[in-house]
Image (cartoon, rainbow, N blue to C red; front, side):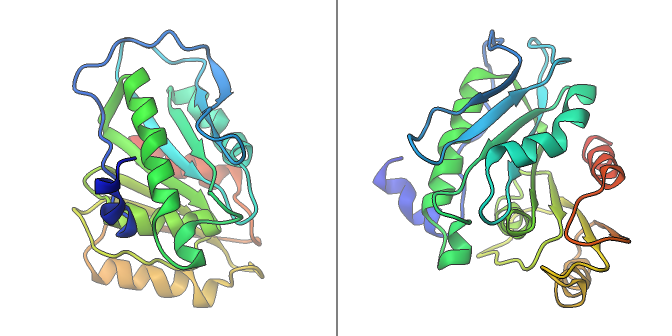
Amino acid sequence: MSSSQEPAAELGILRSRPETIAKPSSSPLGSRPLDLSATRDGALYIPNRQDATKPAPLIVALHGAGGVASQLIDLLVGPADAHGIIILAPESRSSTWDVIRGGYGPDVLFIDRALQKVFDLHVINPQRIAVAGFSDGASYALSIGLINGSLFGNIVAFSPGFMAPTQQSDTPRIFISHGVTDEVLPIDRCSRRLVPNLKKAGYDVDYQEFEGGHVVPADIVERAIRRFLG
């Protein structure tokens, strides 16, 4: 990334956008590394049912604290194959996402690089791009999703703790789920505070509570995907 992009990154702003004309990809199906970093990198998953000649939906999937790309791909792989969704799962530059450690910057730049690689290689439907995450990744998805609403039409936050947008762009639809017995990020001080604020701000929010802890049930994943595609 050029130095001219760094001020935008410090505000959490992503610059990459889908190519208006992209060549059909000949990339192999399944999961493969991004090959953008020698240490913490990430992965790209190409679904088994993808038609490379048609614009595909894309989910940018963000792991929780201490996590890796495969955790989010494993969570989303079933719906991705069923609906032909490409999954981009970048890894944070440190143990968790930059804003949680003090401010936007390194992770925004890395996600931008990863997005640009996907947009260069694959035909992506600009109306079907979502950012999703679990735990710290959900907090980050909410934050950069609200900042970059012109890119992300949908935000999916599984058990978020907070949100920290530097600005708000457009009105992405939002899906939030949380377990009522979550002891890691207790629901009363997290989603039950976030959701009313988002609704008050005018966002279209689908909020689902479930019996359970700091997990993502399969039926919750399926509901989130249906909302994304519907």
